[in-house]
Picture 1 (tube, rainbow, N blue to C red):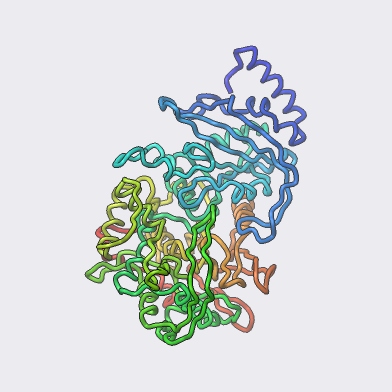
Picture 2: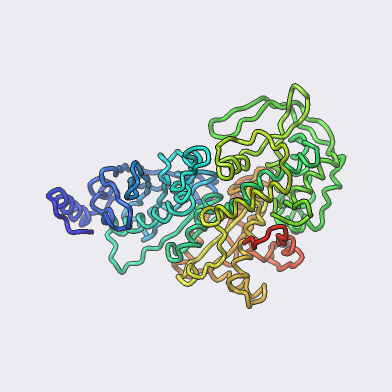
Length: 585
């Protein structure tokens, strides 16, 4: 820090010196004055000014997490909750809020952790921050400068029709997380009085949009983190967001809008039929690839389904649902054709593959239909995430798509490619050459639920394959995979949904200790061979399971799981996007 030059600065320095000499407790460090004295120098990052007057602190004693939390195990811990504001020079009214959870000095393990958001949120707060403190890390989060920790970027992205707020776009795309970690790491070193030569291990953890945010840093800033635990990342943004509308267009093109109960029945019957293909009958489809190879959805035609009437519901924290009547019928060949077409993935009018879709046995969440009590028919319900992307970031008018009249498969293709062109440097986040990160010694645990119904699991396989082919072009597939495993490992989580467990496959395991596994890999060179996981619900709750590292796939023989190499299965995950004029990494 700069040498204090004012009476107040001198006083703060004295307080800091006195406190640091006896900073044996959380109470010692969790004061506004002490925190102010440990802020990075005002010119630490060019173009950024920290606001010492904005610092707030409060101690939280004996916070706890439950055993069924998906991103960290059960734990009890105390921490200092600190918030800080900063601004970008030359931007009137600009303010970015960051939050850091600081562990007790006695439990600090020379670690820093950045956390991400989900959807259009860059902040997930208590859903992510506990995963750092319990491991002795300062855990950080940002509001991206969007106005508050509860404000999502879509609320501030549009300045006026036709005019985006590009600063918010860049902050959401990658800038905010770089600033969060740069400030957080230096503040951590100062706060805990770390010697200059003492190593501060830096990590990242996030899922969905939070996963994309993690990759945005790894792809740009090779030495920012020592390790990252990333789940179901929403990279390839224009493809991913438009893809949410694909299922809508399937039903519209085929002219059949299935009742929700009919699609639910298809999923449940698929799970039952494919459960034992991995050699273990446990209600979990661990091999969706074998399901695709060996199960014909057409065999479900004629199966009876029934769902009782349901009242309308509304929620301040999620989508509302209209009332539905009793649903009683049999699976139709039209519904099966909808399911098959969704699973195939988007193709253009010439039959060329444009993008990928969900795995067999994932729910058809995007096949959104709604019951019209006036006509007594099921009708199209436009997917909100997909519609918002088109309205906000392509049309730039903020007007949601109330219908998809005239939209075809070719329209979706055009939207994907236009979005790829416009947001290649901000939101696409699919740069495959990770050489700087690898050269800096970085490690990645990348995981994705095999039954993800929001971000297709094959999306992660596609990126892993892009990195392998770009970074190890002269090696065979197997040798390249082995080389990649030394620092970047991908795991497909059996039966898991989007960044969570799956109520339809409750006995599926979830890797809630990823950060601990990553820490052991980075700090102790304990390279994982399989990924540790725990069954968090269902009849087998508490059981430990191991997840195979891609491209190996699980197969149970005589009650024991093996990780096998199955080329036919691997091939089902690979797509030739011959409908797109440029490589899609």
